[in-house]
Length: 234
Image 1 (cartoon, one colour):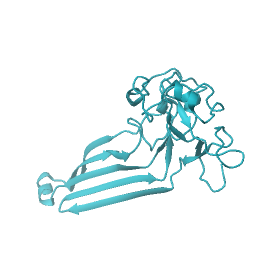
Image 2: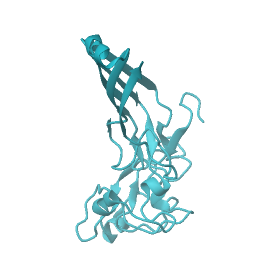
Image 3: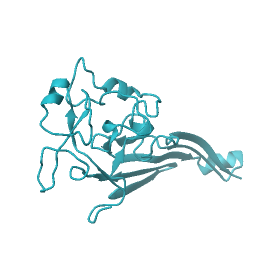
Image 4: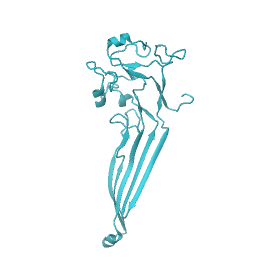
């Protein structure tokens, strides 16, 4: 916790892409051995933010070169509840969302082969390829990650994502039969409706994961549910 910053903040390193080859590692002017003592092609290039005198010193270390990367607590939380009626038709919708919030892709959510486990499609397709190296790949060098993690998995701005979202929490459309029809079948009220929960969301998260959950992968994701029903009063 730091004075002037939100609670549950992410505190880590800035990155500037990855190393493309061994020669670039040798020629790199910043000493990041305190963070990654054995850099390889596809490993992050950590940014030198500051030093003992308050200015960059061409050395990356945990004391001077970590910074605020965001917070998991939203600065803004909002919702919109809409409803309308036309003759015997009724409609309602609830939108909910948050803004100015960050999420951390860690453990099973963000790390390929975490705890010697599985790999996701976006990690495989976006991984650093030494045969066709790019500065900003969709995923750094593939490596088997244990519980002790690795230099690449330290908290940094690659793993911290924009966590804002807008979700349609509920939408419902109903039709109430006219009274003249109800008299024929001897009912006081009959309403047919269709309702949907969590039908869609707009977000910038990795495919398959939900910013509203923002967990490490041990919990079941939020489900979309569609329900049809009838309300009857005799």
